[in-house]
Length: 316
Image 1 (spheres, one colour):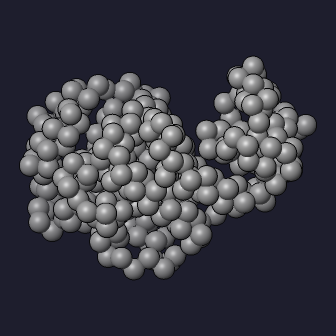
Image 2 (cartoon, helix red, strand yellow):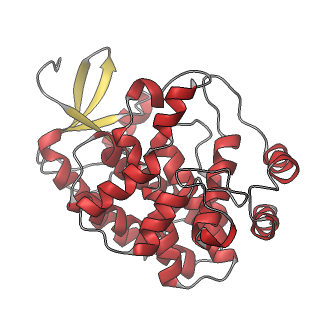
């Protein structure tokens, strides 16, 4: 079947629940723009389905746009179930949480944005925080599934993961961890307003292009406020995650204590992920290489006490 007028949305293969009856069809891409049905409307995801996935090396699955909200409901229900299930390996829980978060962020950045999508992100963060607090092995498992290829949405998942793990290392409470997780997911939402040719440009930006990029933290605050966000700490983290201790950051060139401590944490997580992920114009650095750059060449612009603690956290 070839879809020219019908719009499909990519979903997470790992988030499909064995034994669940899906009220909508699920498709996989065969080649080009040709798609085939993996699960028919009203059918169950069975071991035969899994065999088909394995035999055809299926990695990407899709639902119709009109069915995406129902898919989100199904996956959130599944997520809440497995987080509380001790028989599910922590590695699988972490993979599913990562995939779910990536789906949510991709939808926030690429699709229409509304309060329901913010709520979906909130649920994923809550489930992640609960997992971290319930299982001491959760953070290490989550760090293992961070993506090493840079896309805006996977970057946001990675940054949220690093911030949550670091917050747990710093003994943050549940409310503080939730704030860090949400801020990590939302920190680049302002890039919705930046032209795609700038976001996806291979190589160095021109001065004019960089000036446009520098507006994305403020755009993010505008978007969140339009959706009714009133938590000033969250808004501060989103707007200040590119500010630097020495005043060399943007968008307001804030210095030192004028930058919220959580934004300073987000800045470290953001830079670390940018250095350790692969882009079209650069390879991914090893952690020690990234820390060498951050410690030796960015010490004037980062909170050094937090950076040392972050390095200790990552070397556990």
